[in-house]
Image (cartoon, rainbow, N blue to C red; front, side, top):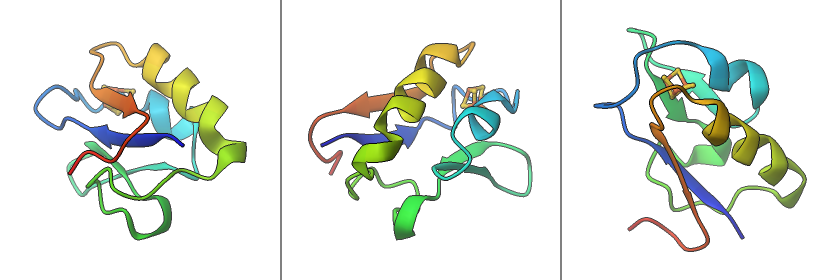
Amino acid sequence: AKFTIVSKDECIACGACGAVAPDVFGYDDEGYAENVFSGDNNTGTVAIEASLEADVIDAAEGCPTEAIKVQDSPFN
Ligand code: F3S
């Protein structure tokens, strides 16, 4: 399983991740990204649906500031 979280301190609101993985990354009122998948609320505790894992990895690799963290276990 994959878990993901956006480090908002590192996000520069470039907007790339939501285009790559729209089912996982949304934006707050200031344009900073967050994991909105299935109630995760950017906690990194909800396993990403398997069919979306590739998109999440693509988004993480494409983020210009490496703000998107992905790992195989929950973040908390
Ligand atoms: Fe922010 Fe990176 Fe997405 S800068 S908007 S987390 S691609």
